[in-house]
Length: 157
Ligand SMILES: [Zn+2]
Image (tube, rainbow, N blue to C red; front, side, top):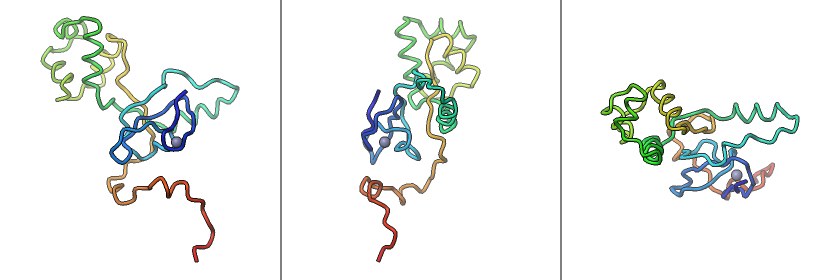
């Protein structure tokens, strides 16, 4: 279990987000609409308590994206396996130069290449992010912590 550093809620899965420029762990709710840099604890499935609907809803609330540090993930896994780039390239029928560029994040791997890399290295290059659309102008309507916990009063006069 991880604790949301914004609302304090304990959650099985938390997102590493950019919160006012600070790397912060947040629950799914608090991570919504923010830039997600990583996910913690996603390998464990939510405990099945006969509530399949809740699980399904949680699943639909996120979309999958290539990890921000995909190059690092590939290189780390490859180095762990002491696998030279050339050998890895041969194993997945890719050009060594292409893989080198992917590791440096100079280029994105195609979906096919990504899947081959994941399989060969035993890693996941996809992270789950909240599915809310990214708002380019979110600088203007940033919600402060104070606003979020302020009780919602009816009249404002
Ligand atoms: Zn939270």
